[in-house]
Length: 328
Image 1 (cartoon, one colour):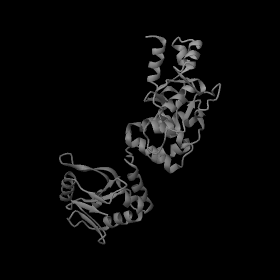
Image 2 (cartoon, helix red, strand yellow):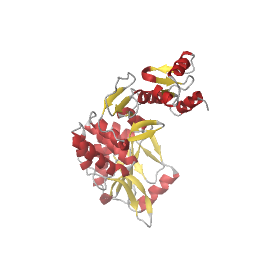
Image 3 (tube, helix red, strand yellow):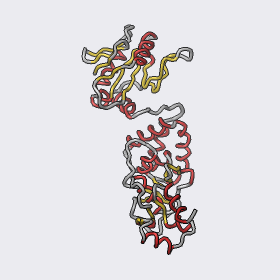
Image 4 (cartoon, one colour):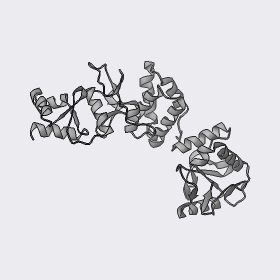
């Protein structure tokens, strides 16, 4: 393999870009680099980054180029890292990068942040790009986002990976001693999410819980397992076991009729036979008409169980475990 092929191979693993520093480390001379740029074999990007002509231009290529521009130790961070990690509500661009020390020259391809605390265990490799991990991302964003949004992001990460709870506590011990902005908020949020905490599994679940709290209704149990070990009837989003009421959330935003599948109908019938009432709740009901949603829940909690497995609200909402459709 000649030096040009070696450079192309590195670039292919980096979304079509590499840096002069990497090319020099492969044994390519500065004169050869300049010749390759002059002849069009490589394209010179700002801040010492080289692009292989013909490689697909993409947002990820821009992120990769930015991390290369700031040199070793740089990592995609903040909202860019959140988008790379699949945390809902964020985009890759504009690129944000965190560096462990002030760069000797300021690159103009990203918004950069300096952090003296950027050890390797705060980093992760995502699609070939070095980025801050999910736990560090939440701490970084807590310094500038509204507390309620920070809480939702924290819950989204915990819902996806509950085992990270201990990592958040460790990160708080590391960063809390440094007087960082946002650590006070994170301490409060983590204190409210102690042992046994179950994070909302979706944005709709978060909205539903917030609506119930604002209405002064009791806190439901999340991700409730109905039935017993001998006869498991299913896991439901929200539950009021004492009142035998279950709430199933449908996160689809744009629909008018929620049609139960055969499996749903069979499960609803089994739940009804076991004494449960099931209340499906759509995005439109919870988000667009939260007062209507909470009034239905309040009515359900007051109604004595009549054995029908259904909840009715003045004729305009009829939800039944025996019907094929739940109409809103």
